[in-house]
Image (tube, rainbow, N blue to C red; front, side):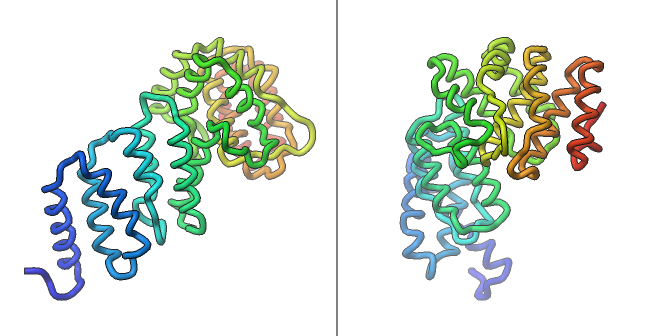
Length: 303
């Protein structure tokens, strides 16, 4: 018996109905059904929004952990939201898992742009975080304009695109571990997984490339959404190399005139983390300058 009032019991009964319906569907059809439901989203959200969401949630729960790249792109392109409080990150995560063992493709980049555009105007914190994740992925797309074009990461990006195929592919593996959180330093899981990607490229090759690709400009320095997270993560990688080949370069980031200083704080935290990997006589000098120039971050810098 279905409850007559829309209580918790009603919700549970409708969720059970959706899961029972989905349980009778072949797994191979599920991605296409998710796409079909979203294709009808705008026309049916007024009279059948709850039922559509229950069905989509049930279909998602029946998906394998990894779907084909074509299915992942189709779901990402089709997904729509009204409020941005639920199911926002799932299609991006699905796509990332589906591409975990292969290079990103133009089809994926197009799907990411479509989904980003569909999130426009949604102001939830989750939607904001997902837009940041998409910006990091699209930083790797040569067809995506860098905004602003003179972001501090521009030289790295242009050199990455110009690198020979095998090196670009290995750098792409490094960039999969770009961190978009507010963490001041990487956790053990990141260090373990990113270290494998770094070893695949080689610490000497990484340091050589970064030393050539990162250009320290004069004047006010802007940071794009994706670019600032890429830069922070590359500084974390620099700490893992334990090389002195970047000692002449990275301390210069402390003294730059950032167009929006608040956007650079996590770069400064990353520099503090990198300095921990350097000899004390070298690190102490730059930590002192860092704390004086960046009091907002200086008290949290170790050493």
